[in-house]
Image (cartoon, rainbow, N blue to C red; front, side, top):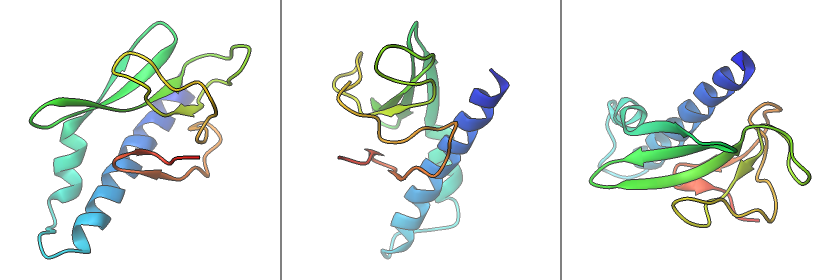
Length: 111
């Protein structure tokens, strides 16, 4: 479980870094963008998934992380959100335990 906790911390940092890089491309970016985004991100643990949530003016789902291996996915697989409560189970967008994944601050990359 420690590997998963470290991988989730890295994921949240990558999301915040992508946000800060995106904001820096425009005229409204500032040094506090990384910290602002980190403060807005949280993880909600469910039975099968870890849900990455961003709370700004409202709560939105960034994506889901598979907690344990099942018939189709491995532990750590990044899944796009299909709804507030469920991931899209068509294909993983990377794996937080393996690394080397590409994400955006808005969510996992599309296929």
